[in-house]
Length: 155
Image (cartoon, rainbow, N blue to C red; front, side):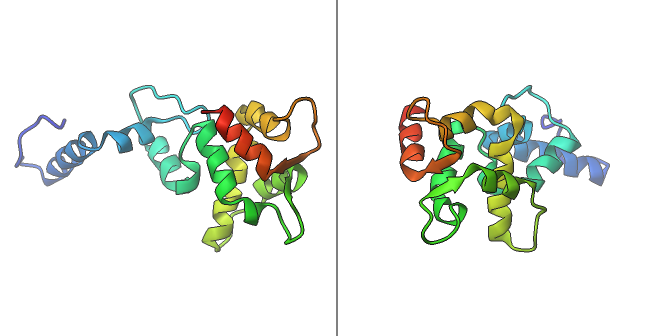
């Protein structure tokens, strides 16, 4: 479609041709639209549903790599850990946050979407590493130190 000449007799076709050219000029956007939100895999095609999923997804949860998610967890650690005296993110509270409906507060929605992304069943291995980065110790809590260590391990 992007190879078709402009102007065309149909203004709607012209708009589609311009859109196709713009998408091809932005390979990062094209890859993001094509990316499976659970696995990060691409298949070279995208649908209206893929575009809607991309639009509905907060910018913070768009990166699909485990490393990007761990980095986001670190950036939002203070808000995720709970109260001032808490030094860790409780997995039970994090899971409850993931089940929370979206609100009118963009900052809260960012945390909810991040929790949903990490708590996705396809991210079980990542969650286990967050809770168990130091060996067999599973305490249901994620510390800043564990996230930093995991970030280094993920490269």
